[in-house]
Image (cartoon, rainbow, N blue to C red):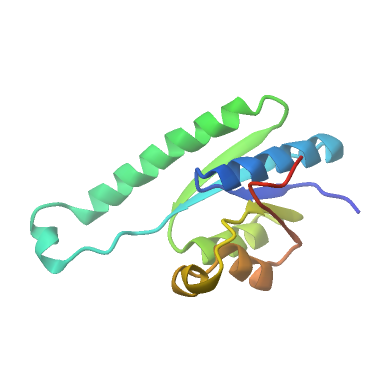
Length: 146
């Protein structure tokens, strides 16, 4: 097996930090780069709010803020070559699209491990990525050692 590029979806949670840590270890072993990706979901606005603010400017500021935070997270990992990218869109869909477009060999992502009603109501980005990914997916949890 050869891994030449790893994608790490990053949502700034402990779970994604753990996934990035796993990815760094794998990247060292396979001498490959990591692409850290954050997908900003566009907020939904009540119609009355659009008169007080420009939604597109708000999305740009969310994207810029996420970009700075993602670069900081990548900079903390000194042992790996990490590129960062921030998109506005639907997380599971964009993760799979970027994996395909970038010819990623492995996705390493954290899971919040929700079960029951929380899982039904919130869904699981990790579960949807596993089902639709164009490449293998390694799902980590906060408790996973590595």
